[in-house]
Amino acid sequence: MNSKRFGRPALALAAAVLTLAVQAAPAAAQLVQNELRSYADVAQVASPAVVNISTDKVVANRNNHPFMNDPFFRRFFEMPEDENHPRGGERVERSLGSGVVISADGYILTNNHVVENADKVKITFEGDREYDAEIVGTDPRTDVALLKIEAAGLPFIRLGDSDALRVGDQVMAIGNPFGVGQTVTMGIVSALGRSIGLIDYEDLIQTDASINPGNSGGALVDMQGRLVGMNSAILSRSGGSQGIGFAIPSRMAMRIVESLKADGEVVRAYLGVLPQEVDQNVANYYGMDRPRGVIVTQVNADTPAAKAGLKEGDIILSVDGTEIRNPSMLRNVISLSEVGSEAKVKLLRDGKEKTLGVTLEKFPEDTRTARANPQGGGTEDESLAGVTVRELSERTRSMGNIPENITGLLVTAVEPTSNAAREGLAAGDVIQEVARRPVTGFGEFQEALGLNDDRPVFLRVYKPRQAQSVFIAVPR
Image 1 (cartoon, rainbow, N blue to C red):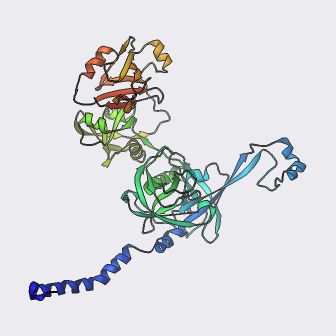
Image 2 (image 1 turned 90 degrees about the vertical axis):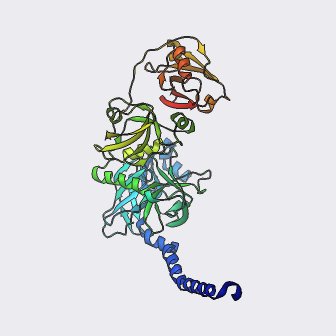
Image 3 (image 1 turned 180 degrees about the horizontal axis):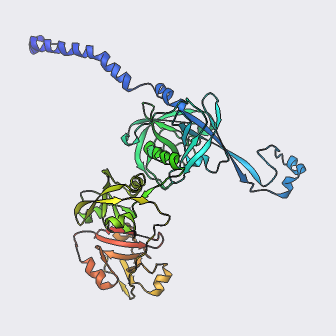
């Protein structure tokens, strides 16, 4: 170092900084050691509370033949005679999975599909301790099950906050893949709030930690060994892990556990609307800065939503302060709320935000609704670019399987390269509204198309194949 260039004060300052850095180094190293512990430490904390689950299920023999009841033929075909292969029309299937002990007195969390229709459930701890388990309750809609064994003083897992997870956080998956024994794998949170269509209520954590058959029901833990998810499913072409695994968030799983403990079943709240995701074109039509929330395509009669004054075309932005990103998230937030509680629903209506209080009710068996409107008939119209429509008649209604309570204009053709086709409009659909105005004739259709010509054409469309209405925003 050139002392003439920097001078004595600068040299003294540099020396002081260097001294502080050297003194701070051990403290920094200790901090890193505390924050980034060995994976073995994490496994040591969580693994004792993860168990293997084996089930026996009696099923009908698909290939049962009278000859197979004859001992000679059974010996000829080398068919065993033990209790697992009865001679009659039934056989015993065995399967393996995993579970997580959540209390010292023997409550165990696992997937519904691990124990579904099981006649016998056996729990095995590390060290080969075995217990027979009772199924307290199951919830197929979230793929959660609660088991109980008669024991005390068991190692149990600490609960983490799945809502605090971030994409990129490290996680460890613990389970019994392929029945080889307890195994741990490491990865990160790849995504949050995933919905893959496997179960009714999904808000899945996606991870690249290896999850394989047999891991189902096992633990997904954070770097403090706390339960943040329950391993549930994989996406794979080979049947093995390809880096896309899914876990049920611990917050959702424990909410289901509370209901199963108390009632043996899950009592859900409901809103009574049919929601649809807001895409960029819908956001543009509503003048939103970005796509957010869900748009209400239908409000069922005599439901909490109808009683509170929600309307078709409202955009639900949040519920009780939780931002709603998609229809699945709305269903999950509402279903996890207490029946009888008042949910604060923030929505966008006519360009203005407002909040409604909705008193939630128990989810009924049938939430369908009917609405009555007149019908029409006529020739064809091509006022909407790339789309041909015809007024409904008794004949077209019957041929298109369109209910009597659905009114509008029947789409008879859509050009494949048109904006309408790109947004999902198809032949056989019924355009019920344009720019939030009901249309039953060509005059109403043409007049509504002339409104707001600087924005996308906003349509409410009935889809016969899905038997439901959706909103579509078609760029001009």
